[in-house]
Amino acid sequence: MSWTDERVELLKKMWGEGQSASQIAKELGGVTRNAVIGKVHRLGLSNRATTGTKTETKAKAAPKAEAKPKPAPKPAEPAAQAAPEPATPKPLPSRKQIIPAGQPLPPQPSANEISPEALAKVSAIEKKAKKLTLMELTERTCKWPVGDPATDDFWFCGLTVQQGKPYCEAHVGVAFQPMSSRRDRRR
DNA sequence: CCCTGATTCGC
DNA sequence: GCGAATCAGG
Image (cartoon, rainbow, N blue to C red; front, top):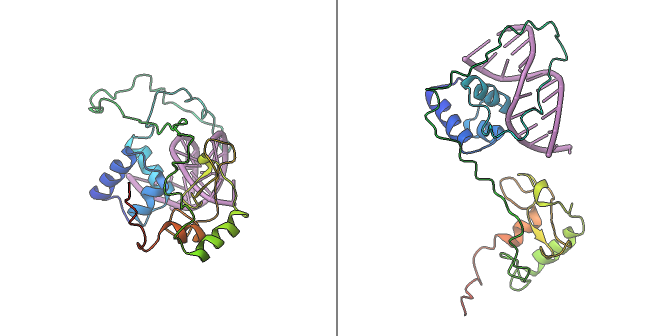
């Protein structure tokens, strides 16, 4: 695969949207995340936020060759006309603690009309849950919340998810009900 | 362990 | 220009 115009555009778009290199690579197909990152750099759109509070973390990297002439001072950034973009809106998903502390959790299946078996399954696996924190969740970790967010008795399942799903097999079972008894719009 | 981006360097 | 290998960090 080569970097066609379209592919580059998609890359730019996704990168701009804050997608990770691996996600972009998956979307494009035929390339690895390394390829994507490499391209991103070559395109010159590496840093998405120069509001560097921490931009010095990477300053050293030459374990192999040290005889680096490094004749590229590059004092002034000629990025005058190459930046029509006002700025890179970086809306950080700051989720403080906007938790009602009540019990209005999302679809927290109130153990009701869900498949009894599925529930049993959940109870069973919850014992083996990795109990991850919000930040530790990835595309491959079950994002099923357990416990009360208002207390520290709250965690996410964290088991390996089922391909493509946000939850592990057990939780997928109770999360994605076919669509049956879900008509309680009584209020 | 999983993941992230950054950098280097042979091709 | 490309991207695997590697690095550094979460």
